[in-house]
Length: 139
Image (cartoon, rainbow, N blue to C red; front, side, top):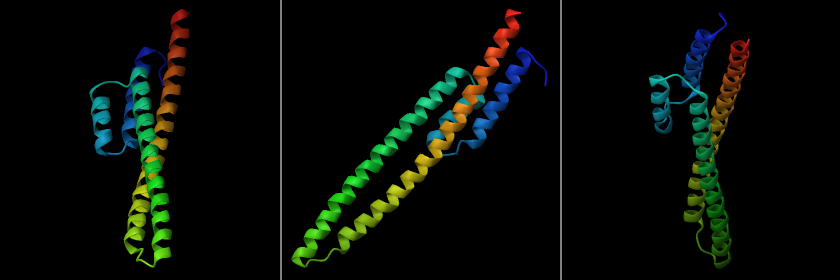
């Protein structure tokens, strides 16, 4: 591979393709993918992507915490219903629905973690290439 500014541009395009390849086609990612297609990937864009994915992960964690609280509340309701001899099937059904929703959020968090790791790797490569380019230009 050639050394120099033209190879850096080529690497940025390759990283854009790499990032595009691991980003899912979910509605949240379509905006990011469109942005990457329209221009080269820059360090600034990577920082923005990391912030967006981190915020998304934080939001998902909040949702999981709310689900956990709802499940704990419903478990208390079930205990009270058992004490008075009432049916617990509605509360149990709601718990099952919350567990499915929580599992979905957990899987989405896992996918977001993978994306954040890849973005961090790309950021490190861009920084290394920028350092190499700065060193070559100072010679």
